[in-house]
Image (cartoon, rainbow, N blue to C red; front, side):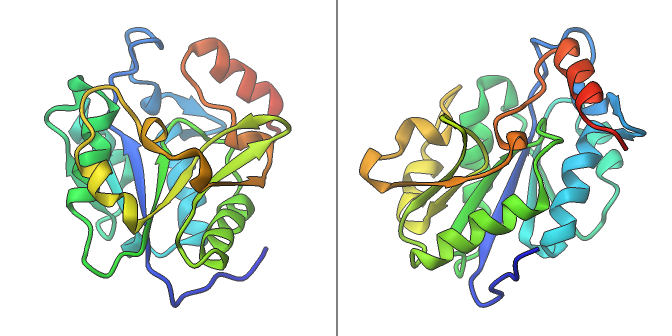
Amino acid sequence: MKKRNHNITIKKILLAAGSSRRYGDKNKLTEKFKGKYLIQHIRDTLLKVFHSSELLVIVGHDYETIKNLINNKDIKIINNKNYKNGIGTSISLGVQHLETNIQGVMIIPADMPLILAEDLIKLENKFIALNCQKVVLPKYKDVIGNPVTLPKSYFSTLRNLKEDFGARSEIKENDIVTVNCDFGTVFDIDTSNELSKANLMVKI
């Protein structure tokens, strides 16, 4: 695993507020996957690499349940009461709560349990190598994935996001740098079939 640069402060905003409309009656983040709840997979991957103080989780739907499943008093969790208005409200809320010394944000969907810790380090190191001035995106083969890491110059834009518009909609093409990463950066779970597929792909 590559070594991290601890001199740069990059906040990791974990998006866990959605209502899982495509999944069905259940909140997908409360579904079991390989012996743990889905939300706990991304939590544990993040904590392999980052200190809990670097994390900021945005929760909305099933707030108390998700908070209890995260089960870490050192991780800051914010309740997005407007989560029904779309992902843009969660990103905006997260950026509004950034400390003044933050030089970049890594925005991470909570429904991507196959993201590797090594890829998170690789993406952060690339962002730092570019002096925290470019937007860094993972790429698997020819597909662009998540998480997206954005510089401070985008904070004002992110704070003004509304409704169902994510960060990707506001990125200038000439700001983008891609990093080759594993399949987990392009695989998210929106349906029960995708959860079944993930179970088949991962042997623990």
